[in-house]
Image 1 (cartoon, one colour):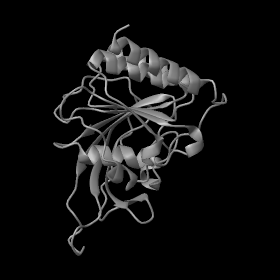
Image 2 (cartoon, rainbow, N blue to C red; image 1 turned 90 degrees about the vertical axis):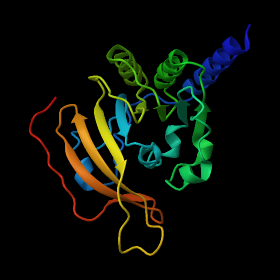
Image 3 (cartoon, rainbow, N blue to C red; image 1 turned 90 degrees about the horizontal axis):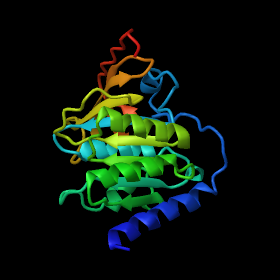
Image 4 (cartoon, rainbow, N blue to C red; image 1 turned 45 degrees about the horizontal axis):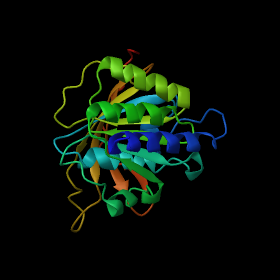
Length: 241
């Protein structure tokens, strides 16, 4: 058996072992903690058992921070989180202190670095079907509509939260994901002294059964929560998908 095949076999065995230890039962949606956003989502949060896409700005930092902040809201009792990074020299290991700063304990992460996009999508599908994982993140992957449909079905089967952090330069095709977001860095608070708290402009571009909206958010690194920052533009639309 080659090293590559052995690695895949080992990962499958690990996920299978985790899967046997999680009780069966639906999990509640993952609320962002921001009432204005959660009120715009039909379920009051991000539905587990579904795929949610995040399209970052020019650089991935804002997208990584937003995703980490969402994952940090998952109860530890829900299990560990698989983070699968697309092949490429830029996709090094996640910076543990930075992740912890958004409330996500690095010890909860299972980081996977496949050799190809095909392997990465296979890893994501297997992980989403594993009922013992709290969530699976596809970092830097751009699935086709057919591939996204497979991931959505896998997430439904495993009742697992699926987050796809799309490449920053991507022009994503139409998707069957439950939601699609755009996250970009926003200017610091001009009243802050020195380095301010992280701020993001978050756009809900698509929501199945819902509308869209725009929010300026700030990360409170003391309370470990998202808050609205400054003037907020929230423009829900009536058309549902």
